[in-house]
Length: 123
Image (cartoon, rainbow, N blue to C red):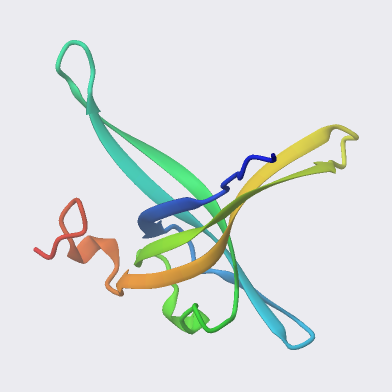
């Protein structure tokens, strides 16, 4: 019997740059980075924050908002699957690239980060 596998990722973070929107035939897609932050204490008790950047690929559909509402600084909730790609760079070396193929995107807050305290709460 074959075991079931799961490829699912869920993030809540801020859009790092306005999306790059492309049109192919009747389909539209958007690509943009999203940053997530995690705070932790080291062994000596010092507080640190680590930012992880995620590459997002999103296709226009019924579970996605208008691409015009996705812009730098907006807080978004995304779930989808991880996709890894390999290509040969101009230098002849193999390059690897990971992205999240978003199946759902929700705008949680359409205000840029500067209007909010850490954690996305209104000031």
